[in-house]
Image 1 (cartoon, rainbow, N blue to C red):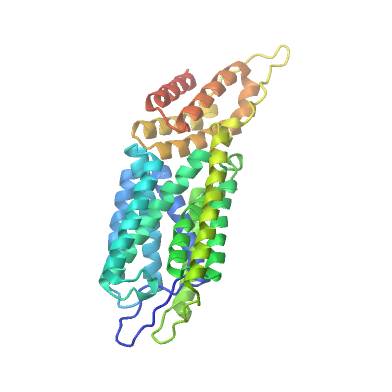
Image 2 (image 1 turned 30 degrees about the horizontal axis):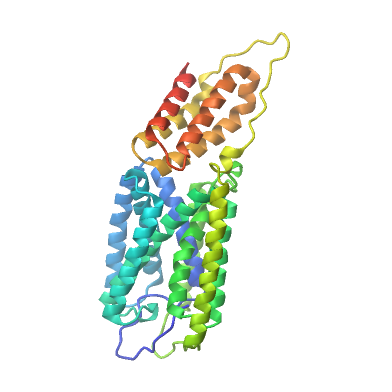
Length: 410
């Protein structure tokens, strides 16, 4: 979706790939890995947001050094950088939201303005925003800065929409994929190719992240239950296989003198498509607005309460053993630590694990001691409500989690 200026024999080889179907497939896969791998290392391995961001920032700096030193497009190096930019862009946005308490609406607005500024400076200096002319250090610098900002913007905007709507992972995939289809149609009808490319590039970020959530989350949350680590591994293997194919075949290399002519268009057609995109954006805004007005706290909180079991005549209530409550206690402690550390998004993810563990143990706990189960069930609901609130109150979260932990220990 990008106009291709003719390359003369005197220019350096382009440092980025041709925009083919392979490009978009790998881009979406990289985006999914960025979401699932960041969450896995942050929560499951206990690195925390700061530690994970530091680790991947160093890796990104090294990979960018190799990329800038290369004299031409190298598939493996290029896509490693994209994966790392995806992870770091996600982490930087999460730090702003979870640790610094900046609202997603504000970070979305800031990243939008920053992206406009980068594009403005890039165009003022180079007179083009086409990715088919990334053949100098300044242009490559602008390109990677733009990519990083688009990932951060896509993360903030995607998370903000999910926060507003309370959509399940399956539902959340539909909006970005529909908008991408509208952009692709507009490109075929004569839209400005550079604008179409960058709009689609931004939207692949929430699409990939939502796909990752859909695969990784448990069925009770509307996902497929594959898990964060398994999702990351599957997508990394798929990326590696496609990149290996591209390295062998070189089908995505832009060679001097072999560029495809830009899709013919006119100013009138570009304006007509732009008007159509504006209508599509307005419709999407209305859809999100309606969903937000109907959102009372998310699908997980709208579930009907489970029926309370009763003991058979003559049956005595049994105490819960450490084995009965061990995983629930451990998850609750993790969630409390994350809340106290200001890692709200990670705490919400861990609260999901708490909900799953509690639901899995419900039948056996009810059968042993219905009264105590009912007490704990209410306290677990209080934790989920406080941690998943649109505007979480740390004091309320700590109180709910402390109450639950004291009851679990009693």
